[in-house]
Structures are given as C-alpha cells and as structure tokens.
Image (cartoon, rainbow, N blue to C red; front, side):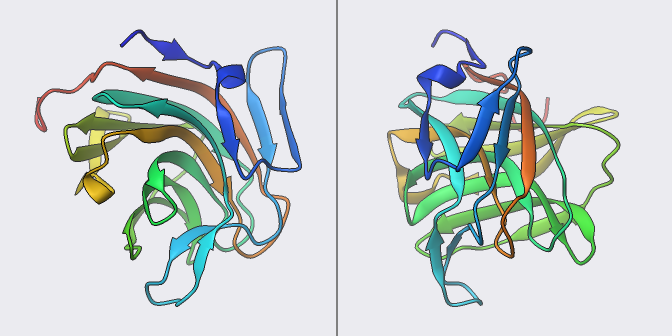
Length: 195
C-alpha cells in the first residue's frame, strides 16, 4: 500500500456536514449537524447512524494516524478515527466530552455498541492510531512517552473491506467544531502488540 496522506479530495463523506472546508494549510474544518451520532442500541435503545465521517476504502492491513482538535463544550461532543464496514459494524476511537471532562473514547459496534473511556487532559491537538492486523484492531494514542495502547478489539463483522477516516458528531446539539490537522493511511506501522 502506498502511503496516503491528507488526500481529503479523494475521500467520500458519509453524512456530509452542512459546513466543512479545507484551508490553505490543508486542515480540514468541519461543524456537526444537529444531534448527530453513531450508536447502536446498547443501554440507550436507539439506533443512530447520522454522524459525519470522511472515509477511504481499504481491503488490506493498515495503520491510520490522525491528529485533530475540537471545541468540546457539550455532553458527548466527539471526534476521532472511524473504521467501518457498515451501519451496524464499525469502530470509533476519539476524544469525547462526558462527565464534565474530555475522555479517550472507544466504541466497538457489531450489531450492538459497547463503550470504554479513560480521562485525558487536552493541551493541544491529539494524535491517534488504529492498526489493522487481519481481524484485529489495535487502538493507540500518542502520549508524552510515545504510543500507548487504548484498546485491542476484533474487527466488527470480520469484514474484508472497510472504510477508514476521521469522524465527528454531537448527539446533544448542532455546531461542534473539529479540525483535522493530519491524516495518513499506510502499511501497518505496528507488527506486535508490545514493541
């Protein structure tokens, strides 16, 4: 796989937001629509697939890395990386506002959504990486000491072809603003869980 970096023009929106733009520095700016989300059934009971995601297709193992920032103000404001094979089979890994604080958040959905979160302090843009190795997804965030594991999960639906890229949504409001600074899709940068 050739390295793909910040080729926003070659990607396709799932649920294109009303407002988005690419500035002179190549940053993608996007603003969420009203009460948008990706979620399936668990606890809350509803099925939502109207969040915004800018995606590219991949049928190979990969690492995707995203650096982004957002104006987190309201419960559940969120942005990050998505790996998706369909409306009920996907993973989102990002930063989400919950319990009055920003959290690293992972939702794995295979018919039903689960959710794990860990508190994270933001002092600038966040960098996340998802690596696909066969039917496994390794989710990592870059901290002051390098890459740290957030979650290891099966690829939902064991899909061969997936769509990968940044996402944002705001289940409680409209107008969450996110900035996607850098994105890449490459051959896997990780071969082992612990290196």
